[in-house]
Image (tube, rainbow, N blue to C red; front, side, top):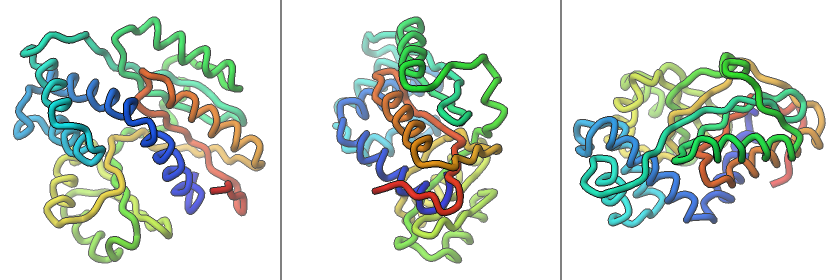
Length: 248
């Protein structure tokens, strides 16, 4: 989606997910464990871990939880073995979805995602059926009231960003995955307050949705998928038709 509707949806979904702090902490904990397992437990030498620690702090995750998750990844504490998986599918109106999952039971998560999609007007697709419509990028969202566009553009471009979008009430800074840590560090160093900072699947092909009921069906499916314990994030390529607005 684009413009105001897109930001409203981001805020609405964020509020819904933030209300379930246990789910937020569980997702971050799994990511911390995986990051520490793959890149070591020292955030100075592990950019992914450093970013996740910042995410944990911004989510008010207790420091003890963060420490335990990292130690599980480095083997200092016993823990379950997690793996990351992607599922691709379609929602109402032919909207493409990518579902990111972190799980200790692939069969369980696959069954839950498949069942949830089929019960809510969607269906799973084969590997590669949807993902070609998305690019893996770093994405930073900054509320427009926090910084002026010219200052943000100067900071972001110097740090390696490839695009800065003015979406009215917020800015989006987009960068290649390889420059994510550099851009993140530069924005933090310049005290730019971030609404979110994530590695995202951003659509390169948009599917326009012409009616409000279809849009609601898509958003409902995204919400119930996000509610699943193993689901980390859901990405869509829905774009609301001109003049179509969702209620706050």
